[in-house]
Length: 278
Image (cartoon, rainbow, N blue to C red):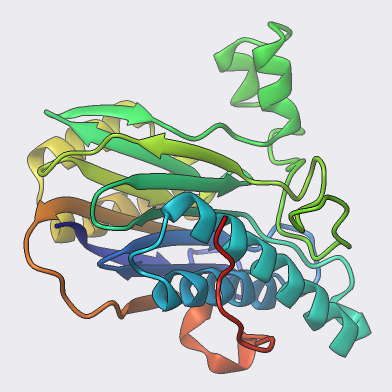
């Protein structure tokens, strides 16, 4: 049975007063969430969405990961919406949410926002997520070069998030900005997954990330990458998760939490219910 063996770190950074990033690492799920900059209660949004998705996965660890992710993102939207309903000062809160889930055979990526997911195979780093940003749309249309996008004043304008807006589609996700990308990842033992908030990827180039992962173990790589972002100013919260795919007997489906998810006061929990299957 394939599973994830990994670790993570979430650092406040050197500028922000509050850590609005959250992360979770377990044998069947790894995720990163980043409260959207400028939004109200980003730490509540990220912790709540991360908790809702992790709970959905841990409740159904052997079910189709794509279906579990759809249900988990739906629960995340519901929980963020409930958080706003409980406290009007949270109006506008939102978060990115990027997760890799496995049922022991298949791996599926679920993604909203501009946190990133990468796969490392044989020392080669490949980005497997697409940023849901205004600047990424300009890049895709050929209206910006990569060099121009790195300094564009709107490079952090995120177009799709977990934001708690009312659902519109039949499966409970909104058309457009609340609907996650789902991507199947064909992973093998020895492959590695990196999930990171933009506090890391805005400051550390992919070439350096690749070299670090090539040379270091998961634990050492996480510490080195966070240190590299801090060394370049640490102007945002910095969160990354690194996990290696291994083949072995199943283990307890719990995991470790990081960042805003460490404080239960940040989590808005909604009524538990079983994940729907297709």
